[in-house]
Length: 452
Image (tube, rainbow, N blue to C red; front, side, top):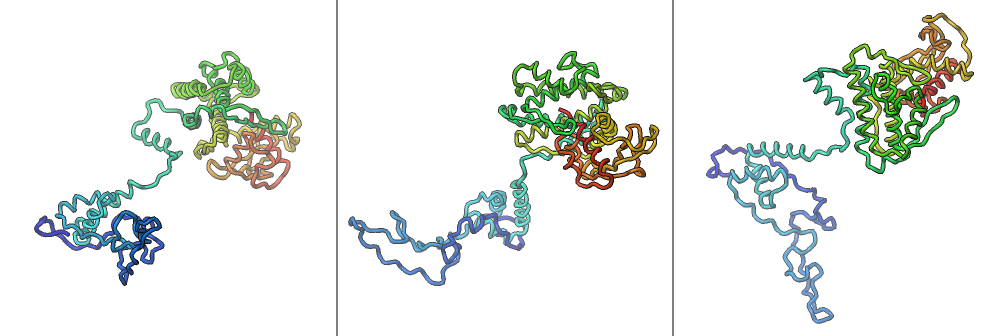
């Protein structure tokens, strides 16, 4: 209770605020007809007969008494002792107890005194509400996993406040992001998980193929193939002077040169290589984007090569995540769109290669280079989606909506799985309409872009 002689503060009446007590179910005796509360029964409990002597001459305890203690007036189940009177404390003491009350750290007597005081003192009632809300924030449940967009938001905020003196080129940011995400996954796995089995899958001709390795072996594969980009920039190649080998042969050569199964020690040289590549293209300026990177039987400009390496890093990161039972999200929408766009631009040439080996139908309408030709409308849905028109009869023809003979609709991530050779072409498209042969040729050409 607050009294005028305790504190000169103005006191006003306020509604009663329930304290942060436990639920009644936490401590009530549900078998009792009174529910374990503080209500008095309508009639006093009947007295039990005095216990008689036991079989060994001692006095047996009563049915509701505790041996070694005197029976009390509320020994029946469901009845609690009468609470002690509320102590009368000065206002300044009660005000100092509000923090402890909000944290449920007061004694029973202090809790009753504070709650009685809150029904009559408006300033303390307002303070108690604020403290209780603050305690609710302290105990809010949160997930342990970090938001996958946290890194990009932090970087965007930092660069907005203090832009980088030497920024990473926009065409290199997907590679920067995907290598950083994979490195974060590798930091979280244990020593034994580096030897977890991983099956690398891709598509050759008309059938899927696979190669067994380990988590560490996958990182060795990325290190070896990224060496092609490093060689194009004049940097050290982990395989030395064997840059003429295609990616699969480079990987096999690197695994054989290692001699024994790779361990987590492979992470550091791979991460150092990715940092060196990003730093080099950032300092090199605009002209470096058109450097040619040779992949054995084909070549790409550097800006497309780093986008392809970002795609490969993401797909193999998912292989690793599945092997160690770890969640892994797709790239951001803008980066995913760039990867899909690269695959769509490579499809006409891939289709022409399959036609030369007899794996695709013959051209039907040859046109001059740059002229609109028969096309398949590729509609990609979801994050990174869009519309592309794939020229069918010649890689030099121009895809055109006016010459579309078929349409294929599918999800962006599913399309990337098809391009990686991880989804059968005949099962990939969610929606198909038009020339069936043209649709089949485009889907199989997309799968043929995959490799180890």
